[in-house]
Amino acid sequence: METVSENKCFGGVQGVYRHRSDLCKCDMTFGVFLPERARHAPVPVLWYLSGLTCTHENAMTKAGAQQWAAERGLALVFPDTSPRGEGVADDEAYNLGQGAGFYVNATQNPWAENYQMWGYLAEELPRLLVDTFQIDEERQAICGHSMGGHGALTLAMACPGRFASVSALAPIANPSQSDWAKKAIHAYLGEDGDYWARHDATLALRTAGFDGPILVDQGTDDPFIEALMPQSLATAMAETRHPGAFRLQKGYDHSYFFVSTFMEDHVAFHAEALCG
Amino acid sequence: METVSENKCFGGVQGVYRHRSDLCKCDMTFGVFLPERARHAPVPVLWYLSGLTCTHENAMTKAGAQQWAAERGLALVFPDTSPRGEGVADDEAYNLGQGAGFYVNATQNPWAENYQMWGYLAEELPRLLVDTFQIDEERQAICGHSMGGHGALTLAMACPGRFASVSALAPIANPSQSDWAKKAIHAYLGEDGDYWARHDATLALRTAGFDGPILVDQGTDDPFIEALMPQSLATAMAETRHPGAFRLQKGYDHSYFFVSTFMEDHVAFHAEALCG
Image 1 (cartoon, rainbow over the protein chains, first blue to last red):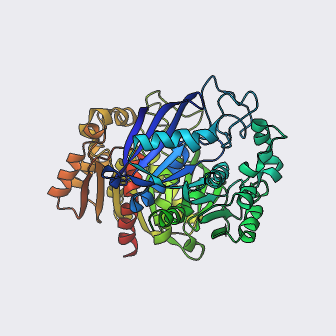
Image 2: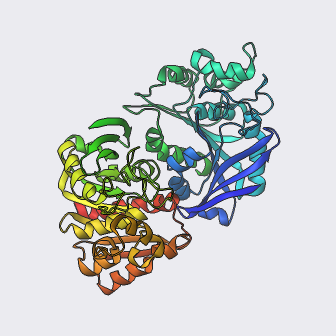
Image 3: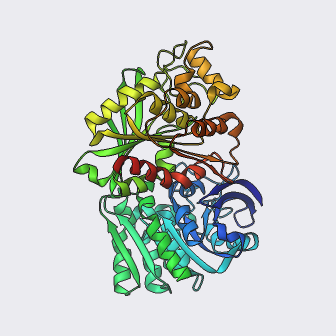
């Protein structure tokens, strides 16, 4: 593993690292924020999964999460959103290929060779992090924005006992019912696969469920709201009586100005679940 | 004036606007954050001047200032760092030309035609802002990072009564004594000009002074520290018995991870001077 950069930040260290991924068969870059207290003992960790077109860097520089993580003593992990590199398949569309891994293990060509983001985030990267940094494997939580909200919710529901809490900002909430969201998932997994119960947060909540609280924020002026289908997830949360909150935030859109506005709430929500 | 974008952010609005500058003879872009209370009455304003290679956008997305400005009811202004465009002179060096206006009125060719950033920030842009937004002309403060710290300090000292307070993060503190910093200023103003008392913060403090508090933060691991010459400004502040603080922050570098870590302190410092 190679250190790309390390910067002191809110008393801790914001690092960027690169390693060879066995599953994605390419070099992968990720960010890790370690609060000051990680110098002495393992700390709880909050994963942040990003949205379409993002790399590891967007949330790391724009969400403002480090200040709250430092205050609460949490580590943060910022993975990339897809495999990358010259030999990695890509597409001109912004919502397919590099920057748009959709947090699945692709089974279709040309994607199957590298696009194994589900396994990368469920297995390979957690193992590397726990082996390398002062991170407490027993205290993990996960959040995400947009496509990353989809990833956070579906991973949390598919890994019982792994995450104490899950949250999402403007997640892709019900992709099996959204023509826009189906496009990439069909490309990666085929049109006839039996995978929606795992890769659709609304369906996963109704079937697998989740053993912890859920927080969802959605801006009312989000230009993607029709494709995101937040109402499906809100309905599922209400009908399953799931502990947590689904919040509609008046006037906010899909940008990092929206994300950063509510980041303090999300970090506090996870800190409560992780640290009591 | 054209609206480039407006995003709701911490209850207020982060806008980006473009206008034709008479002084710079090109289109100029700037960001303005207006807190919620600016919907009802004029609010105090904090100017943020950025460093080399930055546009209006860097601090707006990475410094995290909006949350504290929203809490305190301050507007924020994020000007660009130079004139820009196809017809505007430029240089391959990162510290000369577009992105590197150094907050002076250039007198030398080919820069004099457009590089009038001093007048733009001292006169043209404030007039436009006060005429357009709910900004209280009588309550202004200014801060900046690196080259923008140089700009903030020198503008504040040259405009008595304009700014209630001034602060800087890792400012270019004594350019007349720094070979690195002199290069661009010599290109813009000539090598023999009598301008250092205005465009060197250390000299300006010793001659013009400033009628308000000064806050300076400097990371001890800043790779540019030799060229920035913070010790000159610290000495001048101490010798002139100037109210304020010069702080050395252990382990921090020159990045926005440093800036964002101390942004809350800077906004609070200015809010105290502006609002009591």
